[in-house]
Image: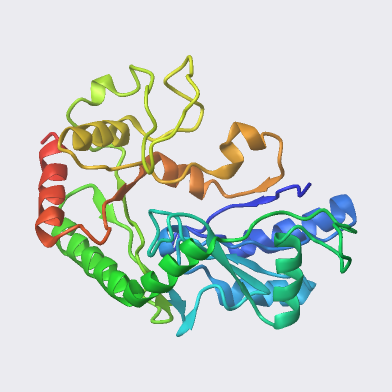
Length: 320
């Protein structure tokens, strides 16, 4: 029953813009007479959000923060792990995350009382009777013992995985620094930011010509793009009103021909048809990033030679 209110990005971390956040809070209070129930900053691609500014705004208006650190497991701000600043923190153990239990995730709570309340809802919200009686709607959101056991084992390799992702990021930064029109997304120079670089992201200037660009968006996609394969709905048109530039799509197709997955960045949530009409406060930065952004492989099995091959393939794709 929650009604989302979307807050745009700022251009340095690509995460929630604190200035737009406060604007949204003030405007929702004026329009509805109510403050938002929660603030949910997201660690996009593992990049820390401006949590100091966000927490200051949250404290000012008395709004709890639920950190979406699903992509930011192990990322830190000023030495503190993401997910431990707000009232709750959310982690993901999906198959493509920093560590995995095959699915599911974890909720970080600040005290036992909150944890017990959450687990009551997560285990069907049963009252203390010898039969099933419910004073609230409960769910069945428990992780199985098998998955939990896998997760405990995976925790032992988390730091190794983070170190690998940071190494891959530094290699991309070095190899792409002299490629005109291609810009690897870096964390702020502020030493408080310590990203895990779950995915390495980059942008492609609009004037860079890519092989096969003239054929971009000419055919409707037949299979799921990116991540685990799944069932997709067929569509009539190959284009939408908010999509990557033709050269970014052409680069994705070219790289796929080289057996490299080079997917678009996340589409802005307020441009998803399912959220049509939801309130949004934006300066348009996230829509501009979606036009030019793309992601590069960075997982545990990506070797130095793989990174070199990926960068050489990007160079080959560019028409000089």
